[in-house]
Amino acid sequence: MPQGEIITHEGKVLRVPGNGTAEVEILVSEGCAGCHAKSVCSAGKSDTKVIMARSKSSLRPGDRVTVEMKLSQGFRALAIGYILPFVVLIAAFVVTMVAGAGELLSALLSFAAVGGYYLVIWLLRVRIGEKFEFNIKV
Image 1 (cartoon, rainbow, N blue to C red):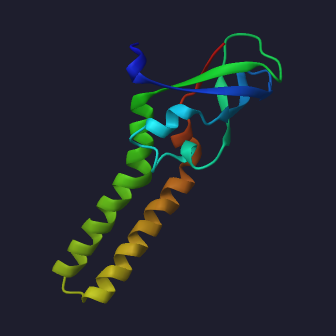
Image 2: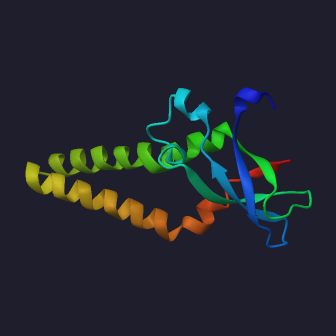
Image 3: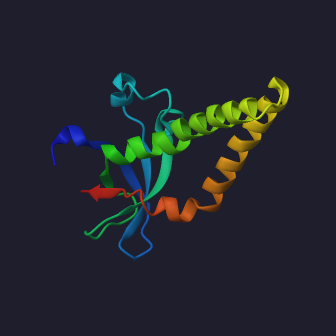
């Protein structure tokens, strides 16, 4: 896969549960400063993040590793977290306005629809999380 299609972060192994995964602390790098998505990326909001990543090699706590994720998965996360809720908000507002509700009621129902959207996302978090795969490159 070409390098442009992979997002990488340097990290340190914190824990190895023994099931082919490792808990890795990702260190936000200087590369985030030039990224066009840094304002919406949760990796840019703090200095470190802890994630579970798959690994085929034997690792020990303290090992330095590179964590990789496909760029398409980053776009999927962006769509789930920001784009789809915006579409739900606008669609709910338009539908309620066309149905004859006033602006205030339409706005309140639109926000309730977005709240419902995020509730569904929260309920499906495990299933959605399975679609995001971090791999360790030693």
